[in-house]
Image (tube, rainbow, N blue to C red):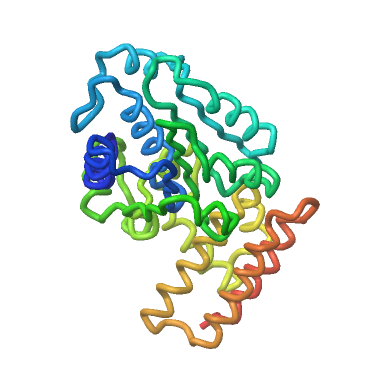
Length: 296
């Protein structure tokens, strides 16, 4: 495994697989940015290996085919939006036949919580009555978005989040620049999200965000100007506003009633931000203006 926070879990799963104690359907639950996609792919590759030990051998025909992206018994479903019923039916049809390499058959459904209801229902029978040596690996960030019937037919694995030490050590090999302590505190449990943020070209730094917010609060900068700076990434601005509110409240620097009022407005904005046709600049500007109740 390339992510050290999964090492123990991966060893437990491979041990169970070698001793025929593995459930045929695993639901891997964890937040975005943890590495669920890589974990499912790596474990799927292990299940197909013809000479597995604590890791896949990397030398057999199955491993070579996996590395080449052409293993006939490895099927993956992934969509940037929703996984539809046709995607599931196509995968089920492939699983229904015999293994072409006379080993296991593996289906990986990435972001299974994006399945439509009809897609999830189409998967149920296969989850209940899989063909021999068939494994299904589902990843999801939100268990609430999955049908109860899907969850009840899978073994649920709550994936371990990275510790502060694991993230710091891993990041030292991935990123050479400075990492703001606030960002490490916010995203340390999800290192891939942190790395993506740091690698963004022209990304906003948390320190600059705090300076700009304080200027808005003190009416030294217009809320509209700050909103325009963040219109391409409103979700992150809302996330940072909520984090700032929590930390400032913990430090006793703002009244509790005002903090909860502003946090409620942030939550409402989070729900609204994905609405088509929403004027994001206007919405963010009005929200930032509300922070002026904290003016000293």
